Amino acid sequence: MQMDISKTCRKRGLEMIFLSHANPEDNLFTRWLALRLAREGFPVWCDLTRSLGGEDFWRDIEVAIREGTAKFLFVLSKTSNQKQGTLMELTVARKVGRTIHDFIIPLRIDDIRQDDINIELQRLNCIDFFTGWATGYGSLLKRLQDDGIGRDPRFSPDAVTKWWRDNYSVSEGVTPTPERSASNWFEFSQLAAHHRESYPDALAAAICVGGDCDTNAAIVGGIVATAIGREGIPSEWLNAKEPFTV
Image (tube, rainbow, N blue to C red; front, side, top):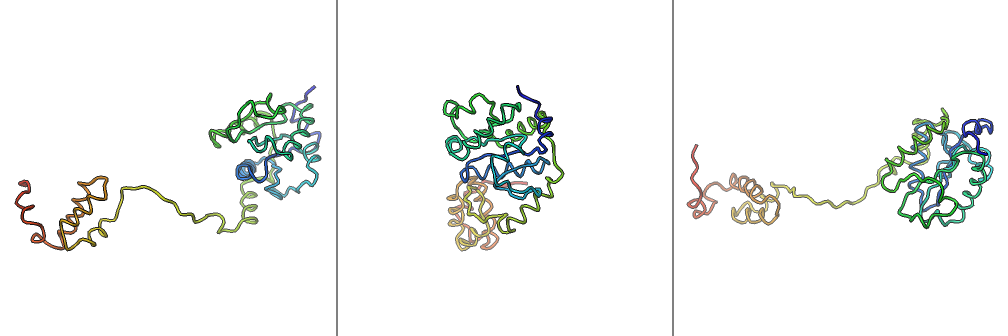
């Protein structure tokens, strides 16, 4: 017989959300999710966010799952699906789940095939994060709210900010990483400066850049022409130009 989760958890005294994941393979996603849930006020237990919200780190994982967990979120990936540590946590959660409705929620984060999913999870409805973290997170929030999972004032945006500042320096917030990008933008002034002695060479260089060639050549030509004057433009070009009337 399965009991209502909110009533059962209140009797047990705690309503933590336990995050089980493959360490270190799935750490990036798990830490992101733990901090997002904590910002919403949900009490999260995760080995990557120890002391968040003032919550002590449980040394005995089994006790944490049995006595302090309202929802067991299993970060499902090709790695966690086979890793001994996560499977041991799942085994304990399955025993608790016999008396609590929808105790385990698998969160699929990669392209693991349905047929390859551990038999302990195959009959459970996974929330899909593989096609998009934001979409999956929205579905998870709705599920937690529908199941009546309570919030804890110790977990808040301020608590998350404090935890981050205590664990990561300002320099770690932004990582300088070279990035290559394709663009048809270029500095006309520099191109013109390199060829300011030769009007034909300036236009040829502008055209070789590619992209909107006629516009590029017109801009560069105008810049160079202001420096070299009309006499710097080949006479045959001036004679062949189309008539201009106002």
